[in-house]
View 1 (cartoon, rainbow, N blue to C red):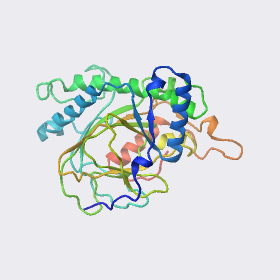
View 2 (view 1 turned 135 degrees about the vertical axis):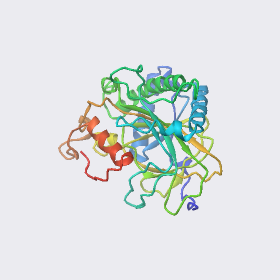
View 3 (view 1 turned 45 degrees about the horizontal axis):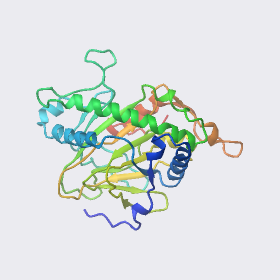
View 4 (view 1 turned 180 degrees about the vertical axis):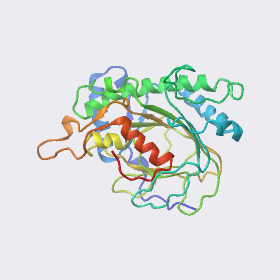
Length: 327
């Protein structure tokens, strides 16, 4: 299957935000970055960030860890089958994304993935991660924990920009993201020929607050902002592509977008991706933000506890539950 070429150039649509001055503590730069975040999430639902302060050698290392993990034998990987905690392994052709309004196919996705959350010591009553044996892939767990801690800190640094973009105090979201519901996914898209209406990852929107996706040398990601046809996401060296999800759209009363995207690996080689999903604590009550509603714009959604919403989202996409009713 060959994708129709995009009608617009994504690099002309997706904004690029430079965080260098903001991270140096320049207050004027922080205000300007927040404005750019607001405009991007209201108009596109995606933006790039550059000069973000993340050591790129860590990015390169976690891509290598993804390659190492997915090269393990099937028995080792299948022993880590995704649990009720939504951690572990989803094998090739075992995952799916529910169809969008315009893409009705529900064929299995052409990818495999490993999911992890915040790591706790083995035997801890709240431990949820599943790990391959250390002897099978030495250093894997340690590398992913180091990466997870780096990305969690990075995501928290972004929260002030989101708050200011919504005319809220800079620390508005901070307490809600203490021990937040955060997930790292290591995806593998093999070089295979898709069936008609079959994708590496079918058209979908993300379910949470913020997704951070490190730049990828192998293309395959496509997005469809409002008012545009599908367009291939450009490659910007050492950048992160950031998008908002359904929960943030709900929280902002549809002010911020949750934009459809999909993946199809037509490169002829293996493609790996390492999206990082950053959302608030499971007990957070998500209700319309005070700056996103008023007498002429009442809340469109009832309050919901984030953990309840997350259970519905994961069950719908990874556990075969076709119930369309969201909480």
